[in-house]
Image 1 (cartoon, one colour):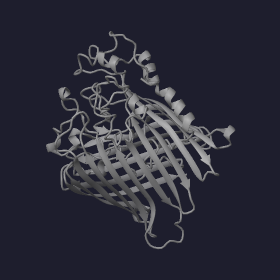
Image 2: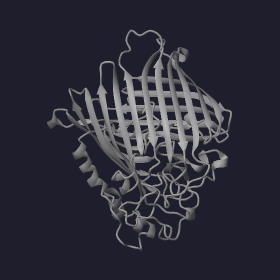
Image 3: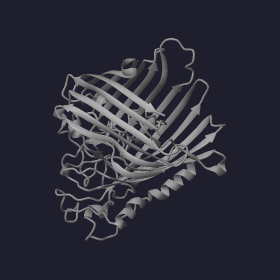
Image 4: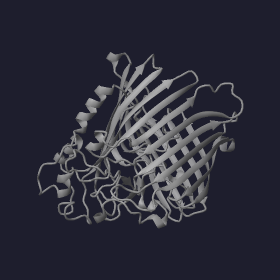
Amino acid sequence: MINIVRFILLFLACIAVQPRLVAQAIPDTVTARQSFMAEVGGFGSSARQTPFWFRSRQYGTVPLTGPAGIVRLGLTRQFGNLQRIHSKVAVEGVANVGTRSQFILPVAYASLLSRNFELYLGRKREVFGLVDTLLSSGSYAWSGNALPIYKIQLGSRGYVPLGFTKGVVALNGMYAHGWFSNTDSIQNSFLHQKALFVRINLFRSRVKLYGGVTHYAQWGGSSRTLKGAYTVDGKIPSSLQTYKDIILVRQPPNDTAQYSHFDLINQAGNHLGSIDVAMEIDAKEGNWFLYYQHPFEDKSGVAFQNMPDGLYGIRWKNKQLDGRRGFVIRQLTAEFLTTLNQTDFNFNIGSRLYNGADDYFNNYQYVDGWTHRQRIIGTPFITRLMDSREDLHNLKGGRKNFGPMMISNNRVQVGHFGMLGEWPSGVQLRTLLSFSRNLGRPMSSDPRTPLTQFSGMAQLMLPVSWLGGTQLNLAVALDQGQWLTNNLGGWLSLRKVIQKR
C-alpha cells in the first residue's frame, strides 16, 4: 500500500497550498475568562423518527426518535494570563427526556494553551477538513454528526505562519490518540488521527490557497462475535509495533500468531480520510471560499482512482452590510457530494493495480462502520441501515456472501444549499435545503434504487429581552421522498449565555 505519510509530503510540496483544518461547527471563539450557557426546549414531529436536519451534525446530542425535551448546561473556565500559556476546562451536559431519556456529555475536556498551540484531554466539538462549517451538508470524514470521541490531542490553534516566509506560508496540523466507546461487536478499540494543512497568502492576502490531508484509523480492540479469519482468538492487534504500522500506514508483518488473515491481506486497522484543496478570494463586496474534499479508504483513493468522488463546495460571505435596510443575506453556501465511483465495482484486483468497490465507511472487521455511539462520524448522507425507512432496512448491496452491513447506503449524490440572513432587528434566518439520490452500496445494487429524498430546515433566531437577554430559536424541518420517513417537525428552545471578562 502507498505510504500515506510519504504521499502527504509529496502532495504538499507539489501543490503548495493549505486549508482551514481544525474548524469547529460551533467555533471555540470564547475569549471570556468564564462563560455559562443554558438552553431548554424540545421538538416534535409527525413521525417517530427525528427529522434529518434536527438530528444531523448535532454531535449526537439530539435523539433519533421523538418527541423529546432537551436541556443543555455548559460551563467554560480559563485560568492564567490569556495572552500567554494558560489552561482551560469546559463541560457541557445534555439531558434528553422522551421515549428514550438519556444524559450525555458532548463536551468535557481540560486543555493547556499557548499563543499557537493547544494540548487537550477529553472530548470537544470539532469538524476536520476544508469546508464551510456553518451551512455545510457536513465535512466528508469528520462532520460533527457523532458524539465526540475521548482523546488526547496536540495541535495548532489555526494557521501558524512560518517566520522565514514573512507570513506567506502558514501551517495548521494536529495529532491525536483516542478511545472509541464499546459496542456489542467491538470493545476497547482506539482512534488514530492526524492532519496537516498548508496555506499560502497571495496578492497581500486577497487570495489564499489551501491544501492538506486528514487521516483516521480505528484499530486494536477485541470482539466476542468476530472469529475465524477476522481476529486471533477474538483479539485485534494493539501492540506498539501495530501502532507504528497504523501511523505509517504499513503492511503488518507476516505473523499469524498476532495478525488475522484479514489483517494480513488488507492492513491493521480501518483507515480512511480525505485530501482537501481550497481557494479563498477576498473581494470588496464579499469573501469567496471554494473547496474540494477527495475521499480515500485505501491506496486507490490516495491515487485518485475514485474520481470524481468527493465534496465540492462554494461559500460566499457578504461584506457590505452597513447601512442596509430590510432583510440582508449574510452568507450563502452551495455543495455537491458524490460517492458513486468508489474505484469501480470490481473488488478483485486481477491484472489491475488497485482494488475497487471501496464501500465507504464500511469495514468487515469493525462491523459498526465509521460510527460512534450509533451516529456516522462523517457526512450524515452516508447512512446506517436503521436510519432509512423501515421497509428499506433490507436494502440489497455489497458482496452477496457477506449479507447486510451497518452502512447500507454509501453511494449517494447530494445537492445542498444553505443561507443565513438577518433583519435590522437582529433576527436571523438560517435555511438548509438538501436533495439526494441514494443508491445503496457497490458490487451489487437493489432494483428499488435510486431513491430520491428532500430534507430541509428553516430556523429563526430571535434576540429577546427575557432574563436580561436571551435567544429564542424556532425551527421547522421537512423530510419528503423515498429514502426517509415522510416527516414534518417543529423545534422551540430558549438559550441564555452569561460571560465574565
